[in-house]
Image (cartoon, rainbow over all chains, first blue to last red):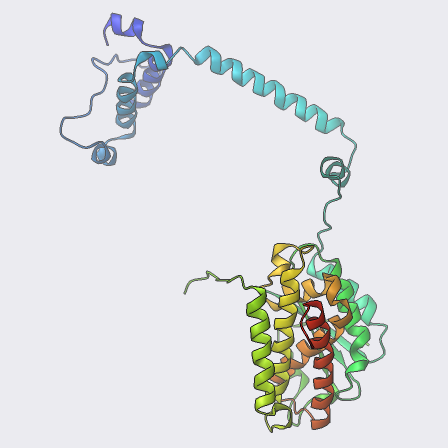
Length: 218
Length: 136
């Protein structure tokens, strides 16, 4: 690169070239480039990118940038350093503010959005809450939790007069209680099975999925 | 095989039309007196489900996901959270469980039971049609 070209060129490009040189020839070794890298004539840019090494690719980029009007490239290094310092300062002040903050996430959310965050509940917690209610219903015998990849199903096994649906009402009320509190879409389903309604040859263990976990028993 | 799930957002007219079609099918083939009365249970459930979806689609207080549920568990959550559906939520859950009995088990529904379930359906249907401003 000639003395004249180097003087006219923005510092950022000179710095970039130095970095590429280090990359190609080893740290600390400065080998001046005779000419800015030029793409071989007749070879498309796309094709060159596919075959050139990484430093060559950056030389090519540098050459492309040098072809832009110089006015668009001011000496930005000082400007960038100033930006970095400002960002560093801002990060530090945010860190300080967070460490001195005594509010909980819920309180902060309420302050920002005017409402508390939705309570995230796990399937296990929901199942526990459900069992707490249905364990007091006299026809309920067992509660199983069956979890697959897509969905968790709570099986409620009852022993009651066959096809007397009104007896199930408190169980469905418990399900509604759980479902109505869900704010997020947890894939949770319920199923009530009456052992008194099993057909001849039907067995409970053949109906309940083998991976179902017994969570409560009377 | 692709895991992509397609969900077509359906409107009020679609749900009412599907519900009516299920009802007509139920009546036309006297499903409640049929030997294969498990199909009566399934048809009654799906008729109610479409009426429920029609009501949900009109409830602007619900999230988009609950207004157009794409699976049964989301629908159950929507039913539990929709004010208009409070009076029939237990009936809907009964129909849901009974349709599961009909689909996945060897349950033999006694004829008298089908009569009761039809009355339950009529209660659900009457309430939902009223919500939708339809004549009963």
